[in-house]
Image (cartoon, rainbow, N blue to C red):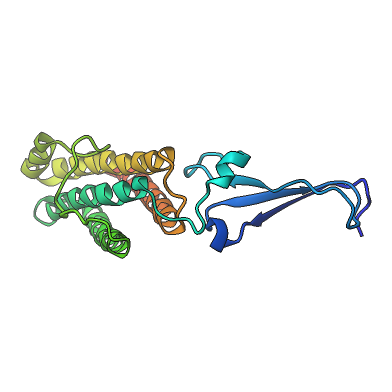
Length: 224
């Protein structure tokens, strides 16, 4: 039994069928422990983008939550654009076998190629299951963060050896950082409430963040 003066803060998932796995309820129980004791209404919190604090939803916003949550236009645009973003990364990794000098750069490029091919397939499947249009893999979207210009791609194609290794890492870090920005933009536009899109975006954020750190460590080793 709890004392009548104790206050208990309980955090629990709201039923997935009602609000989706990416929305949480925080319930504050106050007063007596008996059935007549006052109990505060649930406080529903929408998690923020990776690395950012969540936001408590107002009663009005809560009343408009989908049940069950469905994907939004922001989710669809994120998936469609990220396919083009990943496709350019594959263009970059395709240059590595004939140009790279460092074995570590070659191994890194192979890991990037494998993961981004898999993620393109995931995004295409996500769009198909929701009846959304699948863009052509090389349908690049102008203005997307981190995308290389035609001149940068041409410069990378001309480079060889150690010069290629350095330039590849510089440009791939730029490209990956752009993907992280796109994840932030997804949540800023109100997307990511659907559990599947939220999970995928967070995985992209985590995986590319790890790869950025690996590339910076490799840059430091090659600079010695």
